[in-house]
Amino acid sequence: MFNRMRHHGKGPHCCPPQTMPTQFDPPQFMPPEQYVRTNYIHTVVPHVQPTHITNVNKHIFDHQYYFPCTESVVNECCENHTLCEMPPNPCHMPQHHCHMSHHHGHMPYHHNHMGY
Image (cartoon, rainbow, N blue to C red):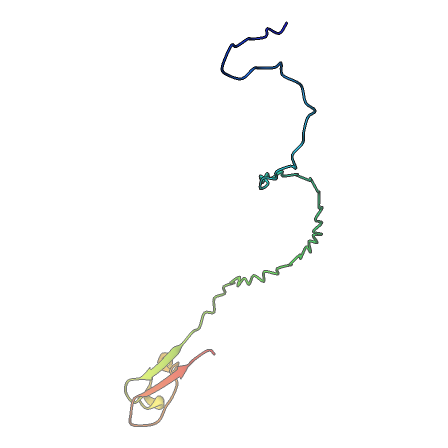
């Protein structure tokens, strides 16, 4: 399989290659590459806010005032008795003139009756 080359004269002679055992160099470490893995963890936190409602019932009293009016009538009667002159002597008066009231004096007389 292997052809031997023959050289006459000058130059090296080539031999068939040999397989040598694998050699291991010590590992070479590169700076690490940074990756971020985000893990989402779902957590439920219940918040309970109690509520209280106080119902206040306010009663409002509306005091309404009415003033009903009734009406009445009072009739007053006033009388004036006026003597415009001195009455004549009653002894010389005819009988049918004696219905006047008598007043003695020199000034006219006013008499008022108020019905209060």
